[in-house]
Length: 476
Image (cartoon, rainbow, N blue to C red; front, top):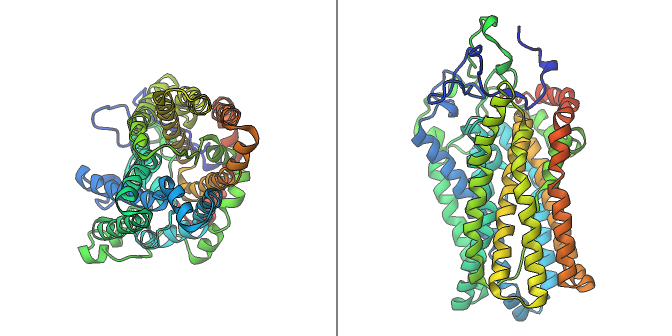
């Protein structure tokens, strides 16, 4: 018979049906690829949506990501004009930006539980209207896609989120050139308003509760004589009329209680201790290192960022399938971490090339090339580690993402707070060499995770299943 819940290691799933011994739905083109999680028979299950409907849903997630990203970072390339006009120093402006991202991270302790109880659509719209950045895009991807192709869409998300950082200063710089720095702020507000209108009309609720949990399904073998048929907990909401689907909030059967929502507002903090793999995902990637190139220079790294999205997305999906075949069909989340090997090396090289180049007045191409290497690496670090956290603890992905973002944004604040004194004390060259070594060490911690990651997930399993049971968030 299949394994009991207590014996299941979170994140370890049967990916490839090598001996054709699993009953359940498989991928149409590759008969041996098991669909994880198993879709229900409900046509309103997002996993059963048509490609067009899925495309529109994920397109709205990407629209939201890009809109909020632009509105929160248009100021980067106009800090000097703002300082000259207002008398506020650049260091103070950097500190203010760091504080903004610090509060954006910690605010997820409120936003994410609200989304788990009342749905993602309402929180998307409300946070877009208020220009707040919750952790919903990362957990909306697994709402719509299976484990074998999540990485590609997570790569696009990372490209829009981090790669967009190179587009925003370019646009803001030229707006400042033609209309002044205040118009860059107006531009961000306009983008956010348009984003809110778009997602109001075309964003559907994607959260769905199913009876079978990811990891339990694939433990069922042919001799169990049991067909995997995840039943809908929200059948009463199927085939809703258009305007009812446009409601901001809906409390659907199977969602957590209000008491559980209050519990989930503080639980991401102990998750950092009880789930070491989640904490690693927050510390691993080189987040929030911004630079001060002229606005036009930001276009070049966009190409590198796009390549990083491909490498960290679809390539890691293919890598995970290939390694699962070699592992008797079993997918371990750590298998996709091998793609960090390249990004770790390129990240350090890019930081050194940029820092040393700036200090030694090398040709501008060297600095731009270094920035491109850094852009590639940041996209890889973000996409791969976020996918790893979701793969490891899918059933509490919302809370796990909150923990990751709190760590990431707190580190971002620390960098913003300390980068100017750091450069003043060590100089540009030594500062960036040090940062390069820190980035290399942080990224290469994936090697211990490859070796010990499953043991850490097994260590976290009792607390994981306890969280799943007590929050009643089974299968979101």
